[in-house]
Image (cartoon, rainbow, N blue to C red; front, side, top):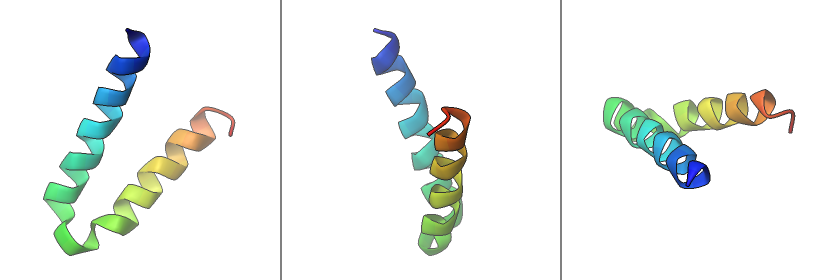
Length: 42
């Protein structure tokens, strides 16, 4: 269940970034995903 919850939270954050930044969203989504990967030690 925790895996699903984590995925929903991350997905919601990405949707919010897309809504906020429109066509410029890929830059912000990339930064967000990169920071998540770094936080996981990947």
